[in-house]
Each structure stands twice: as C-alpha cells, then as structure tokens.
Length: 294
Image (cartoon, rainbow, N blue to C red; front, side, top):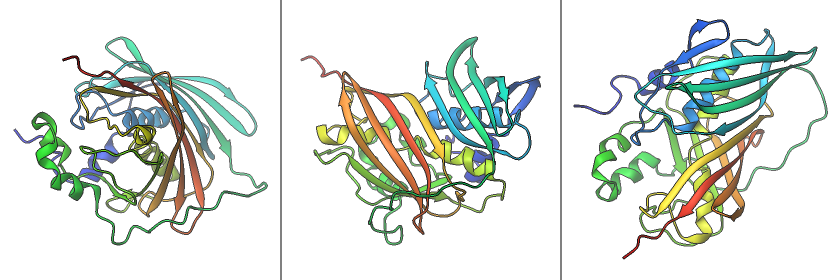
C-alpha cells in the first residue's frame, strides 16, 4: 500500500483548513498522517485558526494566537473544533477554540483579530545568513540519510512535501553535536497560492511547528530521533506583524534562550527575503531525556 499522498501534495495540504461546518460555531477537519501516528501540531494550529476565522466579521485578520497542546491526536480520525465567540469590539475580535477528538479536548487556543489600521512601525533587522539559493532541500538530505530512518516510518518521511525547507546551518540528526541553540531555515510552499491572506496565515501556522522545538536540544547534543528522547509541544504562540506570502521564500530564525525541568523554550522570527519581519513565534515543549537502562 502506498503511504504517500497521491496527486498534488500542496493541494492536499490546502484542503486541511477547509473545514466542514456541522453546527453553529462547530466545525470538522480531516487529519493527515505525517508518519508518526499522532496528528502534527501545525495541522491543529492551522485548522483551529481557520475555525476561528470563519466566525469573525469581514475585514479583520488574525494578529495573534496562543494555543496549548493537551493530548496527542489520532491522525486517522477527524477533529471537531468548537468556537466560543467571546467578544466583537470596534477594533478587535476575540475567539476561543477547543479541538476535540474521541470526546476529549486535545488542544485549546485563544486568537485575536484586528481591523487594518495604521500605527508606529519598527522591527528587528534580519540576521545576515546565506539565502536559499544553493542550499540543499531538506527532503534531499533526508533521502541521503534514509538508511538511518526507522523502517516503519521511512517511506512516509521520504514522501514529497508541500512545504520546501532548506537549512542554512544543517545538523545530522543521527550524529548530533553540541552547538549554539540557533537555527536558520528557509521555507516556502512548493507552488502558487491564492491571494487570500487568511490562507497564508493558516499555512504559516502549520509550517511554524517544524524545526522550532528541536533548537532547544542543540546545546546538549541530542535530537528527537533518539529512543531515549521524549519531545512534544506543550504550547505555541504566534504574532502576525505584516503581510506576507507563503509561496515566497521566508527565513525562520530560531533560538532557544532556556531549557530546564524537562522543558525547552524556543523563539522564532519569520522574515521575507527583503528583510521584513512578518511574524514571531514562541513555543515551549517537553524535552525529556530517559536513558535506557542496561
């Protein structure tokens, strides 16, 4: 049986935030298995944002979200999203979303939306790193390391992906070495996307869950591929600063300021190729090391 998505993988990804409305402020989304059995956190983020967006007055775009992962989701089953319309003010709209599977909450999120209005403007400078041209696509690197990938998920991991990722400072996940907790990745959708800004927000929420948490493992010389490592997202926050397109190259500049008590904190900034800061991301995750007993 073929485990890869058949047809256009980007089109399949774009179907995920297209939720079915099953009741007033209740939606259902399909799941996609990336090879690990549990639902990818970025999928739930994007779908929860889509559910909230469908209840918001026209002319308001997401500017922030704060989510908590409570249980692993089953990638073989759909997810229901209930939206609580907390407030619609003159400038801001607040929504709370709970993702439910098998009768239990697996994720909760608060999101805020704002009308478009002018204001002060400043930003951090983009890091001076190599551009995407000439960097090896992540999928090509993975295929070179195929023999090290566990056989049960190898075919799924090596499937074509809807988001192309290129690492500026790559690391061999099967031979990790200690390094400064900084990571730089270029990414973009593999094909053209519609102009609707909300679609680009959904896809950035999806893509922002890749690579971020593992930055907190860099100073310790470990990766999530090790059997002794238990790595899982606990929460995820995003702030959308400026408009962008997910079918243009974006730089994801990540760092980890702290790890303690089996938790790692990572912060990411997303820039366009021209240096515009378009989003900031933060995530705390479980990074539990359980050495195998002899």
